[in-house]
Length: 211
Image (cartoon, rainbow, N blue to C red):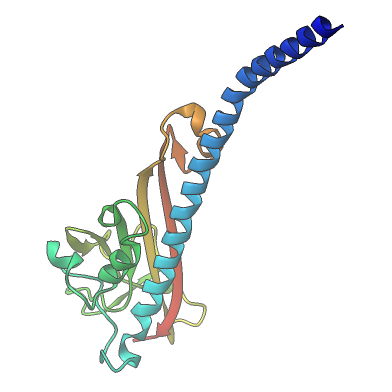
């Protein structure tokens, strides 16, 4: 009887090893997908926070002791990442330490401070709606976005021209932590990711007084 019990325990251990070997790849697959999905949401949260805080900064300049007018979008050179007092600098500062490559983000800033030298105005009209002029900014500097009309185009304030909507759009491309299609199943099912590379955009809008 003793030999029978020993044989039964040995068989049970062998069965457990087989079950563990079968289930381990599934567990690893699940864990890797969860890690990549969690990283995606971490990026999303930080982009959302940066867009909101920079939009708030873009409308509060003239109401703070530090500045007498709303801050500009940025500079026209690579000093944009080291020059305080601009909206794009505020974006990069918010993203520093939160994402892997903060200066790799593209920022579109739509405010009245983007004055079109041809018209002398910080707003433009599309379809009878007054919109803020837009600058497209990277770590290399800012330039007029699509003749200040922006892409995507900013929204019009429902009470324009008394108010103008300031809008900040941040686009960021990043690779997931664990490469491979099989480790990015939920993300590849979304419109934002393809093969472990994701491009995500977050926008925020706040109104300021019209010109």
